[in-house]
Amino acid sequence: MLNRRMLLKGMLAMPIAAVIAGRKTSRGEPPFTADYGVASGDPKPSSVVLWTRVPEAAQPLGGGTIGVQYQVAGSSSFEPGSIVIQGEVATDAANDYTVKVLVEGLEPATRYFYRFVTASGYQSVVGRTKTAPAPDAQPDTVSFAFVSCQQFIDGYYSVFARLALEDVDFCAHLGDAIYEGGNPFVARPFREDPVGEARTLTAYRQKYQLYLSDPVYREVRRRFPWVVVWDDHELVNNYAGSVIAEQDPQRQRDAYTAFLEYTPIQPVMPLSPDGLPSVQIYRQLSFGTLLEIFALDARQYRDGVVCERDILVKGCPELDNAARTMLGQAQRDWLHTALAASRARWRCVLNQMMMMRLAVASASGTKAEGLPLAALRQPVQIDQDVYVNLDAWDGYPHERATLLQWIADQGIANVVVCSGDFHNCYAGVLKPDFTNPESPAVAVEVLGGSVTSYGATEYFGRDLTAQARQIIPRVNPHIAYLDLKYHVYTKVDVTPGHMEVSYIAARTVAQPISQTFLLQRLTIPDGEPRLIVS
Image (cartoon, rainbow, N blue to C red):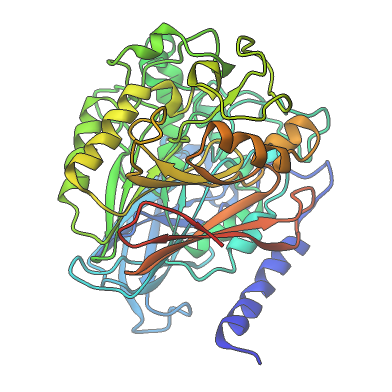
């Protein structure tokens, strides 16, 4: 029987299919587009941020100023009487003809449609957004999806094509929405990146334009409000703010400027008038009494990587420095205060990098190089472990332990950390002391795989999921689930009684459209920091 959800998905699939069918897929595909689409972000009960870029054909000659009218309506047809808010803003070449406006005075938990028009006749596509429930509202459910890591040259956005068919309240992007580098991990990329390495404001802007040349990406930005944070590739690989601020402050400023220009995020205005390359993006958003979101900035305030390298390496004495920080003191204090003050049933932390400990054991107990896939039959001692990625929270063990112990001491329940960056799916529990089997679980972490960026299967040339499921939990018993093969988005359905997490995977990203399927469903019960793998 054809139910409402099936009918809705069928109707939505038609424009997606048309978008994909109309695109060019050859190596000669133009890197830029005649239309950059629209987007919305940071949904609150009475406000939302709207975004667009005036395409080149509608820009005034000589880089002059152009007025852009925005309209917000209760109907996608914008018939008379349906427009609830409208206004006009100016943009010019100094902002790369991007438009970003904070629209206030909206009704909570309401679907709106929006568009941009100019006096010269340009009219954008119609965007769709939704405000958050009122602070005292008690919604039965809130649903959202999160993604990360969408390297343009590593594949097509078949994951986004499926995500666009969902009926979620908002989406979250955990970073690496662009990649500043120009070199692929394989000799033959799926798509071309003519921009190369971005080191200037112009090049960073061109990166965003390149990614927006994909119509499926534009469509998924158009359909939902987004909560966006950055990771490292919005600036440079393994970006650490305390390091880059000294080495190349102009590059930092240029990357920040382009990010703010092309992302529907508050603050609406770009960098501060004093010209300092610093902007606060950590923030919280509430969805009634059911869910509160805490979006972190794990890059701008962190100390740099220590030890001889960051990948597959034994620990070093510098890791024991209790002063090392990923969040910085101000953000850490904010997170503590905000978590303690939250009265929501569920508290979700949007976090760029894996917070769980992830180590592998060297078969010899001394060799620190290479991924061991043999000679491991029993759980090993901690001093035999090789850390997989010290750019993640494993590189900041004291700060991690302090945060998790503080959550335990305060008795804060239903904390779920949603993470990205690692390009593969992992899920498990978080403990103040991962080296102590008696240390209790205090929170849950769900790490989503990448949209396209290469994961373990691409790196090693074969699917190692089966072996990893045998080996990794022996050293990391807090990890309940992992997958090293598929590219996914992660859907989260929140109710008072539980949080249900679904990994939705694409069969392939080697072509623009792909079959998708439910890879795994996980359940987090109310009041219990544990995962049920179904």
